[in-house]
Length: 261
Ligand SMILES: Nc1ncnc2c1ncn2[C@@H]1O[C@H](COP(=O)(O)OP(=O)(O)OP(=O)(O)O)[C@@H](O)[C@H]1O
Ligand SMILES: [Mg+2]
Image 1 (cartoon, rainbow, N blue to C red):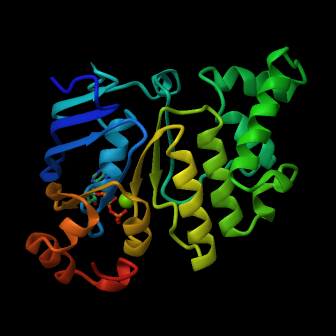
Image 2 (image 1 turned 120 degrees about the vertical axis):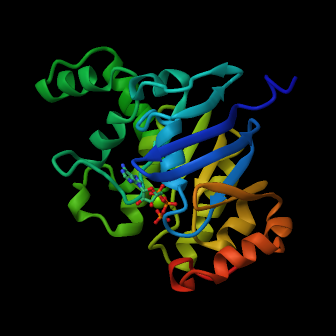
């Protein structure tokens, strides 16, 4: 069937938190080099879906297939091996490390051992290539000039660039971005949109985002979640006219969404 066409294929995924159905029979497919946006009101289950793909939450039922193989509940440590990278909602940099060290931390399957070696000055032959890759990733994200700073010295938009570089450094096949445009000004959002369009040549990208205008520019396909269910999927132009989507957005405070659909 379509087994090998999609890099990620989610079917019938259900996750309960106590009595709350955070995800309810969710499906989602991403083809290689496709940008898919996941939108929906606050609390719809978007981050929970990311957490399931990254192995942080165990599904109650359903399946997640990656590159044609079921990875129903991946161990977070397996993600780098698969080539799945994510950024967190917020930024999540380590304050005790420089920007470059933060990015190097994202680089490897054995990140902790590299990290400890590096901190102890026991540099392996891998260290210089790791540094080069980290600098390349920073350059890609437009943050090479920030490499020696500490995260506390960064502006918010710059810290988001660094978080992106940390995800890119492992050269992922699938990149999960949780609200990359949140808190950014229009110029920075435009730059991010360009970056994502470039990145698409290298990997598939799943983006959770409230900024509707940004979503309309970058997405090949949009999935809309509401109360844990996929209520619509398709092109942005199709989903924005879907009555269920309009109702979901009208039923919530539009100030949370950076604009209505
Ligand atoms: N670990 C958890 N334990 C219990 N409930 C949780 C947990 N994580 C999320 N939830 C609940 O599950 C629902 C979905 O939350 P989730 O964070 O996935 O929403 P979201 O779509 O990412 O929202 P936002 O747009 O605000 O980031 C919410 O009702 C949330 O309170
Ligand atoms: Mg969220």
